[in-house]
Length: 519
Image 1 (cartoon, rainbow, N blue to C red):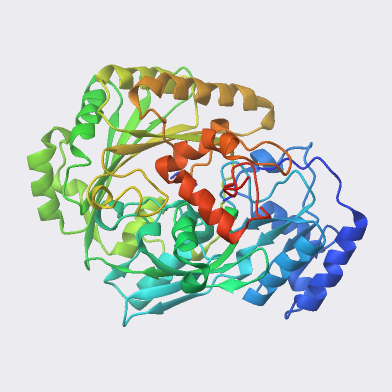
Image 2: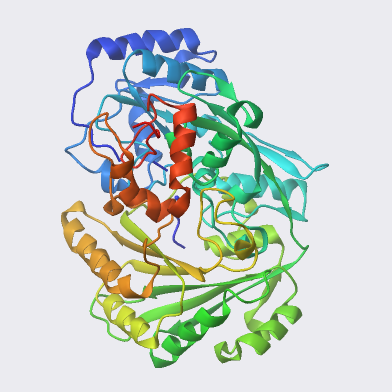
């Protein structure tokens, strides 16, 4: 399975030695834990391990032209988060926040000016309240930890979020959070009811004290622009004792193309408790014409007899058989979609390690009208030329159609029938250009068939090709609108107002951060 999901600034200057030493002294005063367990300098034995293990895309880590953070801070308390922000600000160090390290463009661990990484790996408690069916989740928790802890308390509660268990909730929730239950319950961000945020002045705020504009902004607008969101209160959702899953494998030949073409017309219109995604990938080596595979991968919140009836009525061409369907608990379906083998214990969801890291580049689209069959024939030809590439198509509709575009910053609602994620992965950095050229060519090929004016994109599939803020301290609406409207459409200006409210001096900034409205 493709795991993917947090924040790239190019570090061009060497940090001031005085500032670095002063930051260390300042943090010693703010840390309530053992200092060496919270503040990791470049000389610390733990520094290299944290830097290596926390980042899921070695494309950026492998670069020899980029300098490293002055410190990695691993807070255990909210006061230590507060201290890290205040000390960094006082001594002219930028802050990059890392939850799970899955930012596609490396924005959580690279910067163009002296900086620290605030790594929330030790700030990840999960407290579940079964009475009101809510949970407080600290931002360092992973999706796997969230799912595991919910299932340990209840077999009828779950949460709508992504498929990769090692993704951190901090970036995932703040960018929206699509997943297999979004057609029934919306995004992760649609189910957030409170949050704790530490702002650039060290204030610890909740929904009431940060105000509704800022609370609106952090649910889909990307938290890194506004402060450090330390914890989220979420509304849990009901799941049946048994759900049903299936995966149908086909070749992307003439028959497979017809199936994907038909899928476009029905996937967003099926009952909201049925999610069927499509995954396209090559199965053999490069130039293996005819060896491009398409998978139909499904979660149904119900029993297989009901699923079978729905499929026979709406998508008989797929040829689903009863033996293709497996009933299981919701938590077992999480393991199924993650790609774990049958029989693996659910405790494996607590493993934060990504065992197979590859360089990667991703891009995204939203589709508003079904594409002709010829497009998928062209996709098949392109995938036959590229090993380790994926195209994932997630259906929308259902609850996603019912929520207004302006409800949260994520605007891709009614009128969009599915989302596309394009991914290419590779090993050595030496071959990067070939793979980057391939995905750019695919993206250009798709342009006539996807959303336009703007050509929309999903924030959690971060893509700096869409545009970046001008280097230096000066940001403007005119610069940011080139990429901002692609992610947020008409919600972008409200995000700028929220930014001006909470961070008018623009302390929290990166290549695609929201500028304050006055800039």
